[in-house]
Length: 539
Image 1 (cartoon, rainbow, N blue to C red):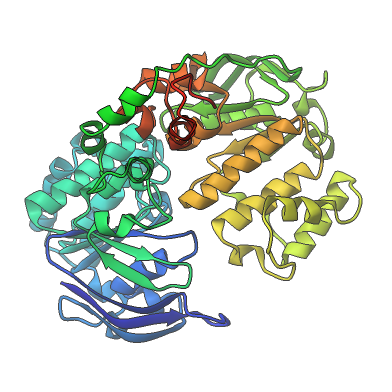
Image 2 (cartoon, helix red, strand yellow):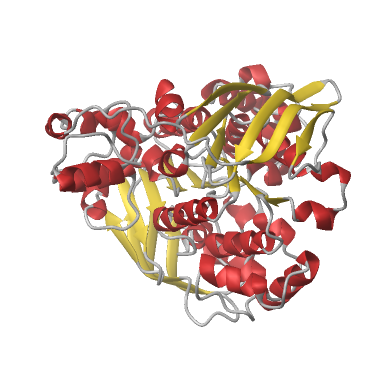
């Protein structure tokens, strides 16, 4: 169905190809998963399938791509819409209409599909993806998972045989991600559709893949059986890492596979005691009765919480539960209809932005939104001026967070991890008492997330109060000393990670599902096994 023959892509001005000499064959009705480090070329590989590379992106494409006999080099994306459906990382950016039904019909209108056929396809797609109850809803009112399914439906109505998805679950809570993946599997199993998807969170998708494509940092690719390729890879989910630690062959790809073989590990471990919450540092931020309202919609309702110095707190909840609204309200620049926030006795909303930055730093979901200058050096110099810090402060912080970022690089040319480090350094230059981060690991691979988790722990040890809003349960398991859960704007849980994360199957990390409550990470298991001590799991 899809073939790559020695395909390389080199963008204008790049010293090296983004993908290099890729050769593979993707069969009809298969689900292929694309994995690799941040910036390894996963999106570029996907975009060659429908001609976005090189028709939209530019650059030099060498080698040959064949899609059902067609060469995308000779056909722009619009001429492949009847063959390839492409869903980008942020589905909302691709919407062109106002309601679900209009969006599903739009592609068919552009292809001059007869009205009677259009109506039938819309109904079939609504039923196939389980979104019939959304037909008249405004797209802006949908949750992230609902938007993702509508985005998939909007390309399916054109009747493609191939579906290409770029990070389809990266912005979704665990439940919404399961719903989207269930819809994708239905397309593969019931309709025989060929699906190629890129995903950083392999723990969500690898068990469903027929084949795996592993891209390396230099753009080279390996493809084959997921169990075989993950045996020696750096980009592996916790369940595979646990299998490698235990020496299981073949490696487990799912919780079910691992649980059946975990008795030998359980026999060597004693059920850990629930870790005590620290809660002993000074209060850095005190929020009381915070509410956020958008017209008749209450996004946050009467939330009171204290953030302490030296503590990493993780904020979780479904898409649309109010996490981002709460963070912006705490920062003092977001809408706040009621409540008070005090940092050092001062409400950030009552002072100017320069003074507020010295109280609270906020890294938004899209860190690049805060970057507007031409070079990393210019961003660092500007941050020093805005923060009233001595020259070189931001650059020094950046080097501590991540080495090797060139001063003359343009911020938009940085990888996701590098961009995140730059924005975090800019925020830290003002030495705020509290640091708030909104979905910071979206688009990061496992090694980068591990380094980032270390950064969060270092920030806490240096005296900051750290609050991280995330859907990433594995990140929460590795860094949280306290977990908060929002539901429909209400604070419904506040406790240790051992208590909160294992109380819900949706929030439990893979290790807890395999080994049992109290054990959260592979590092905990490794430490206990290496020490040979049947004792409490250390954090």
